[in-house]
Image (tube, rainbow, N blue to C red; front, side):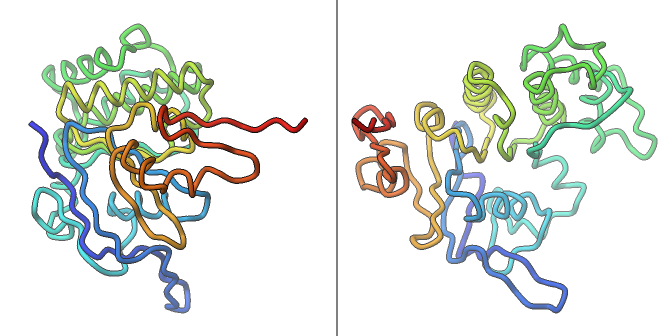
Length: 264
């Protein structure tokens, strides 16, 4: 059953420099994310999408405000507790040598395996089930360096699933993929949110695909702040048109499609 998992209250994000100078990237962020829904983060380069994801993942400190996870302020959790609540899949290619797919996904069990990291029979069952959910059982014994970019992305999602967290954050999960693989990746995330009632929040530049498949959209804008709602909501209130319609690009509010005007 869908429920509010993440709630942001007057959140400010940014950086503290070497001389203790503060750079605010975005502020006054108030929004929530629900389980069982696929929520997509959109916005121009440099607007703060990755900063927001890193802040929600507790990889960098927030500048102000609150982040609630299951109605509890996120900073009150220990690192071990958070490792059982939040799984993170970052952007960029995975540069790992001499490790099999099953071994890498097995690292997702580290919050449960103790100091030595030895996997039990039950852990391996969870690893295999995670691979099956993502559809990569046939890659079990492949070495990571032999995989395509799309296969590696699936492996990292399977690793997050093996971690068995209710929340998964993904930064540009469709980067480096060809179009069919982008569609497949989006469909996979939607299916996982539906079938496993997970809270899945991801950033992307694949705007048209995201509008077709996401349940909710967060649109970050440097001047107008954060707008949230269904793709249809943001289309009707003009948020998407404001973002998309530049330099001969036209947005169709009815079917959420994007068209480029040809010069004659």
